[in-house]
Image (cartoon, rainbow, N blue to C red):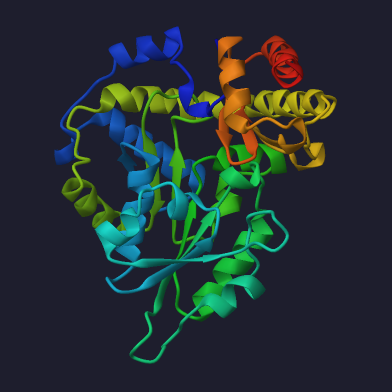
Length: 344
């Protein structure tokens, strides 16, 4: 089975499993797991941030950031297709007591400009309106097709947000993909953000875990909320050992995933009934429209799975994500499988 539903489906390598088995561990709730501490320290070096905290999932990392940055009754502003708004089950409302004000990205990139953000802000509003408490960005932007935000764009938004007294959180689940595509560093891409979350269990290849970064005061607050949310997991050096391998080795091979995604996009573009702009495929996410086929996305997805390929359908589109368990040969097989499913 060629599984292109997400880059979360990767399996740990034999070397990663060996590192997990040999990991030195301690009680992380007491701050005594040496492997976790090493991973957090290494993340701080890579991102050039003061402090870091291992969290079980990216969703927890994002929601902890929202909680620490905001007060109940406030709003957070994010792009309308953002993960925090669409795929975290209303957790910002449940956990933090805040509303989300989604803003449409006019150019479709998923990366808002200040001219788009500013009208949605409520700075010192009248008593009957909720004040804005946080701006949330996403890089790469998942459902904008893995699009990337430049360091200059992010720095400009953070500078303007700071002028009006607002913090900025970066959902950087796939920030290393953005860095690879832009040929820069994750530190440059997130330097001005007040907090950053990145995921070890997507393109980097670890089986679990994410890292939340910020200044020391922010991480102290984040540690309290991780415990409150049930994220204190004791001897997690076993998972942190995999995270260390993913953080050190994973970023260097992401360009291979990007090349495979571009190869996939070019092949799909040649299939009658599929609409895709190959120029928009810059990282490891490929989203294509299937309306001209006369079939639904679920019909095609079911046909693909019967033929040995897994993908994710939503609305009139299908998403495929390349990762370290997918080869260039798998991509060619996938293209022909899609062709058969469409033409059947």
